[in-house]
View 1 (cartoon, rainbow, N blue to C red):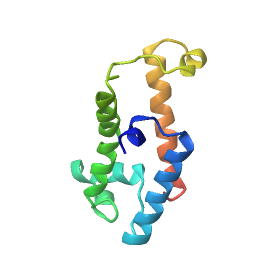
View 2: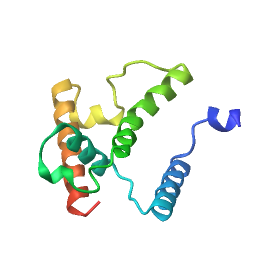
View 3: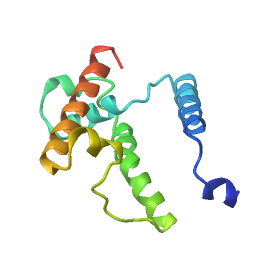
Length: 123
């Protein structure tokens, strides 16, 4: 088991594992799993808007899912001994340049578009 967790999984194995988890969660609980709904749950906790008071946003467990994604990466990096701040994102710099402001704007815009598309598509 130790060697199973010590080596990085291939990208396709991680995708299959996430897909199976999403299917099992939907089948067992009847609830969908998604980051945009988790973000809506966070908005439900901090805002007074009536839109976020309805289901599925009033389920606090979804916030833990969203918080657990970066925390899981942080714990994984810490346990691997490779915990360090990196400002380089590989191929990203060759396309958008080295500027932190440009990188931040592109990432925020990309996140907005992904979230908007997920909501528009119904999930």
